[in-house]
Length: 371
Ligand SMILES: Nc1ncnc2c1ncn2[C@@H]1O[C@H](COP(=O)(O)OP(=O)(O)O)[C@@H](O)[C@H]1O
Ligand SMILES: [Mg+2]
Image (cartoon, rainbow, N blue to C red):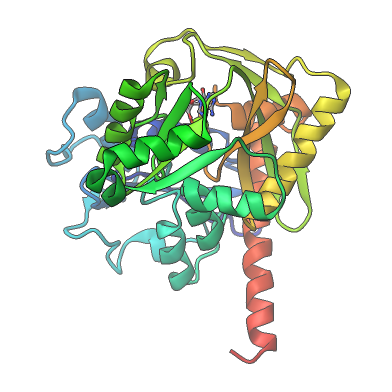
């Protein structure tokens, strides 16, 4: 039998989505076809140190469970080969298995994972990897540039105002006036770079707007104020490189007024509809828009595109693209593909193929132009 392809699953990371990443990685490692792949787990702890050998996923899960974040990983919980190693620095050491894998699956959400940083490291090391490249990851993570790319592609967006933290700190009155002259309440305030609804506020009046902007400014140097609507939330999974396909749409019905952090992770009141309750024309339209959004940022591999559907007039707006969407057993991304007829194991096969295809394509072109 041919040698198995070595797939390095990278998880954890220095951000607020560390725990979700562990759950996603656990699922990915469970569904990767053991007949075809040798799965190599590679962890990054909350301090940014790299973990390999032994069972780094178990080590990080234990830390998360026990609230031991910030302490040394406990030795002696090894289920793989050898003891789990921990790097001293925030870089993978040359003897870590990162440099011996055939393809990487960076299952990291949010900053230092979904934002192009790990993708850059993998590019430099010449390792093929699943998902979007440096540019698409970085643009997809930044709400200001994401909106600019979508607007340039003529995609439907809710009106928004962009401001910098320094402008807010210099002249609050002026910022409030500027926003109020362009948007009506309710207004959503968001940090440009975050995720999981962290730092997002729904504001119904000027006092709330001021508080919302201050909160967003705590998280980022750049802030978005956006027209709020009463919306249904529709999501579509996208898969491909140059040839892109879209899943059937799903719908999320938050347990609260909007889909905030508590609703996403703490309370268990969110309802999901697969497929979304949409007529045929709207279904086709969101699928087309999802592919167009993916192309607008030059996406590769996978993404989940989220829409807001105005309850009052049925208008569809693109809310955001997630280039490394949640990938747990109950996450929309794999669920939507399953409902479309692609089971998780086949989905992973396809993602590995796409990663190899993209890297082959780059190598061939580099050779042709004599690099
Ligand atoms: N303009 C808006 N109108 C209505 N609801 C919104 C709007 N923007 C965001 N929301 C609500 O806030 C949630 C989080 O906002 P989002 O922009 O998706 O941030 P994140 O990247 O943190 O997920 C959305 O899922 C939705 O429930
Ligand atoms: Mg969102």
